Length: 298
Image (cartoon, rainbow, N blue to C red; front, top):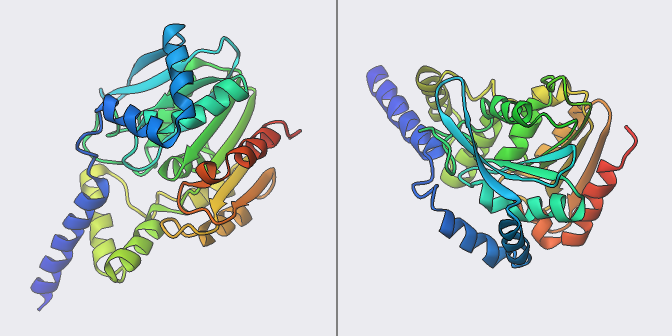
């Protein structure tokens, strides 16, 4: 019986690990990403075309310490302030051009959109759920050396943003603002929620087995990848955004995150919005909320 339980635990853990951390098969299909972006946000097409005509957007590559080559889009606005837009699970940089347009056209920032490990045109064979991605985002910031930085992440990108919030910025950076849109409290909490909602399963034994296998294979456990713990240690101003009808990353998580942040914080609940839909549902208010936050006097 014990051997059977062990076999079931390992098998189910392996299945969950593959299900959760496997990259999108067509992740580097740029044309499909652009088609999807323009269909959802038609206003980005003319702006994107104008950037290309002016040669104001460039594919940039960075060699990571482990030898992987990572990709980012860089939109040069010729200023000292730069927004780093961090995408979600199984997305890519192009999926968030609508936020790049907001920062570039509306707010006057340079913009960097990294493809995280195992996403888009970046190397990698397993999704990291933000935990080691936070270090990669800091490397992108170091590469571009802006004096003012906004990191704006959505979903997994929001968790990445919160996870890096406890780390020190490069010495060149004098001004920092962080925006997290519908991020989870921790990888453990999010996977436990998905196990319950999608499969009707408890955390034991599947989640425990998957976390242990993740440690063996990739060097980290689900429990240590905690945005909540990082937010508690963060001193950077942070705007929390979450849809009131989010059932993928439940809205309740944002209240725990907001409470954990000691000071320099704002919270906006997007009425009626489901997961990662706050901008799509409330374009003008979203821009207004972010703009007001960036102009805050912290």
